[in-house]
Each structure stands twice: as C-alpha cells, then as structure tokens.
Length: 439
Image 1: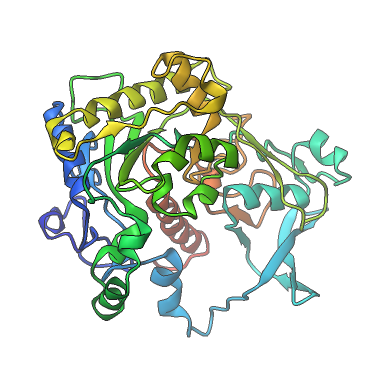
Image 2 (image 1 turned 90 degrees about the vertical axis):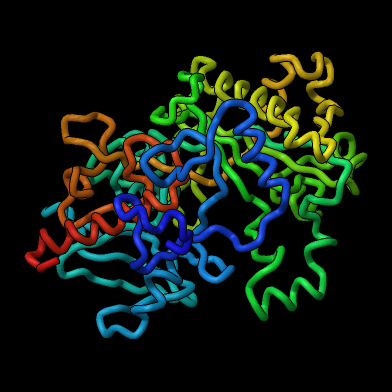
C-alpha cells in the first residue's frame, strides 16, 4: 500500500507483500469534481477497501511507480527462476485427463507449436483458466451437464452443473456530459511528446492515469440515508473522458457505426466526461456452453442480462438519475457540465430522459467490464448448483481443483481482481495443508 493516509490502517491495509496498491500520481480536476459532487449530494469520501464501502473515492489501483502491476508481474516474475516452476507460453490446454475407473484426474493434454503434449500430475491438477475457459475445459473433459455433453458427442464422467450461474457486472454505456473547459482527457492532449518523455523518464503525468478511469462511488439503493455501513448494489465508475476522447473507444465499446455517427460524431471534438452506472448484485443469471467438442472453438457465452424481474433495470435507472443529479451540482457546473441529449436512434421514438428511454438505452449500449464469475460454483454436495466443495475440489472427481473466479457462488459487490487473488492465496494454503506441507 503506497497511499500514505491509508497505509496506517493495519486492520485493512498492509505495507508489505507482492501486490502494490496506489492511487495514480496524476489526475484530472474532473475527478475531484466527482468527489465534491458526492459530498454536495449528501455522501462522504471513504476508503472503500477499508471498514465502510458506501461513499466516493479516488480509485485504488494495482500499480507501482505509475505502471500497472498485474498478477503475473506481482506473483510470477519474482519466482521465475525457481527449479520447481515452469511456465509454457503460447500453449493451449485442450483436455483434463481422467482415469475412467478411478474417476481421478492425472494430467492434461496441451498443444504447443502444433505439437500435442501430455503433462502428468503426481498429486493433483489445478485448473485456473477463468470463469469462461475453466467451464469449457471441464465440459470438454467430460465434467458437466450430461444432456449438453451428449449433444456435443462427449462422454460424461460426472453430471455437474458446469457453466451455469454465470454472473457479471454490467452497465449502461455512453452516458456522456459535455463541458466548456479543456479539463478532460483527450488523446491529442495526452499523447504528446512531452507527456511521453515525462512518463518514460519519471512515470508521472497524464499517461500515468490508467485509462482515464479515476474515481468511484458505491451506493446502497435500498438505504438512501447514506448509511456508510450499507451493502452496495450500485457502482458509479467515473471517467474523465468519453467515447469521443479516443478513436479506439468506439471499437472497444462496440459502438455501432450508425449510432456513433448520429449520437457522438456531433461532439467528436468536445471535452467530455462520463460515468458507468453499474449493477453490483444482479439477479440475472447466464450460462457458458460448448459450441462443439473442438477445444479451439470458443465457447458460447449467454450473458442473459435483463432476464430477471426488472430488478436490474431499476438499479441502473437509479444510477442514471444519480449521475444526472451529480452533473447539476456546483462542483460540475464549474465546468459547464451538460448532459449530451442527442437520442439513440433506436430509442428516439421514446421521450428523451424518460424511464422508458433510459431502459431502451441500457439495452442498446450495454457494457461489461469483464467481471464474469460463478460458473463452477462452490457449495456442498447437497447443493444441486455446486461444482466444487469448500476446498475447491471438483465433486466426484479426485485430484482436480478449480481455483479462479468461476468458484464464487455469488458475484462480489466489488471488482473481482482482488477477490480472485484472495481465492488463489487461500487455495495455496489449503493445497499445502491437504498435502501435509507446513504453511
């Protein structure tokens, strides 16, 4: 932890360990306006990774000296020379090998440089391929819903609800506000030679601001008294720019060309900011299925957003109204903030700003920030939805564990990066315990 005012909170933070946390050492003035707007509307500034989560904050990033610290950089790079560690790059695991009589995993098959390899495990196989690829590999290996596997010409070793229970944090995209100053982050003002030199020499300046995402708010829409001890179901993710700030954003957010030309091209050269109102505890559930039994074919992802009873839409709608309220505060009016009100073409038949319009908009520009999880749910054997037990071992198959975001029973009301690392740390301890190795 390199945020000085938080580092002393030893109950929730630490100053040692492989993963470094810091706030960017450069930020736009608009991020401060977001926090001030939160205060104006009755909320407070909090350390959302501390005791209380409800409130507004600058984002705490896994960074060090202005650059990203991935889990690979934090945990793998320092041990790359260990004799008991080997990493095969550009390799694709195609199948988990299972003894059909013992129902025990004993290795994996993989492809590398066009050649097939078999890697055997003396103790156990640990699957950490993520909430999409882990269920795919389990099903390709005969672990999953019998009917689905039979339809794909795969013999079933054990019938388990693999691929079900898919959960995600999704948001309305494109909620944009124009300003009459030059304080937003635009590519032409960021990617200058001076800024590039400053970043590579000192790791400071605008290029040290990760993606322009600078601030965050957690809100409990069931308790609007700003109770700091609430359970958030809504996140507001603030960006000091928008879809028009960088040409690549149109493609990153998969914005239709016609929609972009009608709605966003008229403000293509304007300074802007936007917020993603994002649901944290969705009721909708999706599923991962196999396209076929070819491991090189991508699985099918059925997000199934909007398939609940309308609960998720109501949370996002509240978030939209809240962001518009924030835009009208003194903090944002200092920059002349104005809601961009050219309607989305497919929603233009509805009154702009009405509940029906915003519900149409959220179904037209639906964004994910890739928090997919829960597709190999942890739970007791008596739970008909469970795939792994409390020690992350696959029910009915010996020598096989799943260690990634897929084992979460429910999506956390937070980003999934740190929780997934926590699962890995806990799993490492359990594996050593199970094999009689001192921790």
